[in-house]
Length: 368
Image (cartoon, rainbow, N blue to C red; front, side, top):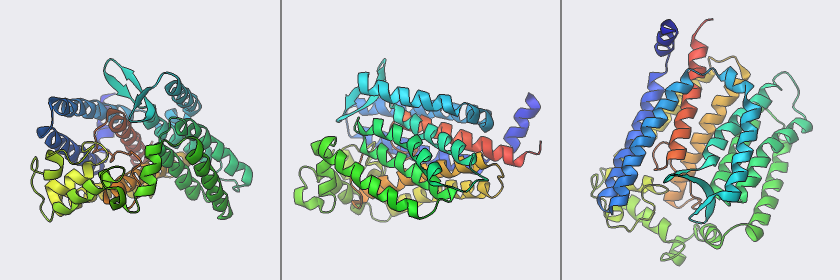
């Protein structure tokens, strides 16, 4: 047992871990900074995030020692659990900011969709790896669509537009990686258009429609639906090269910037740490993606390859959308900045995801 432990740590990707630790540290610093200018509940959020980070890193190391092949064998059960959790949320879930997306336990909230994102990656990786030696047909395309569509429908009913986009993006990235014919992407475009139209008239809340309408020109309604984007861009612009200093950002400390510790933490980083801070943040993400890419070059197992592609795709798309929201080039859809924004469900799930990726990397280095 001890020899296996040493072998795993010898082949652990410490550079990837360092990039993740630095991203989490960025988040903790800025969550603490936001709490300085606000009431005691925000300091409580910082303490909870410390707890989440500690628990998340425990999960990271635990999943490092759980073989991805074993997880693959349980994928069908995980998928059924994922659908059950999403159904339970619709029945007894707690409504926060218009989304019935949370389960509440003794003051702590769990957002099951964060776990579902990982389970969808596993499910699609398992399915596509079974097709490795086969020509991809319409039947295979539709089967993968059903795997993705079932949880997406349940998330639409919450309604959580941001998570719907992420789940759909995971599927899209993985069917591209699987090598499906380009003709299927027209089908995707048409399906998304129909789904969006139905959701617009039947499911989207008024504030969600306002976000989509106003993101093109938030100045039209800068005191109401465009307020968040306007304040976020002011915060980013005021940061300059070196920023105003941690705890000294005018927009975040004077409470002009709503949701500063969650959706708009990127704006806080830009305001307080400036261009240099943003550049460092992006470099840490880039290091993570480079390590994923380098790992892919050494892996010869299809399930592991698809899993890393899905994991990197999830983090990249969520990062891109969150930063785009802060810059006003993408509608505000309520997605956290990976590893950085406040939120236990997101942070713990993503750190567990990194643990699975680390296990795959370690296996690729060890000669059995």
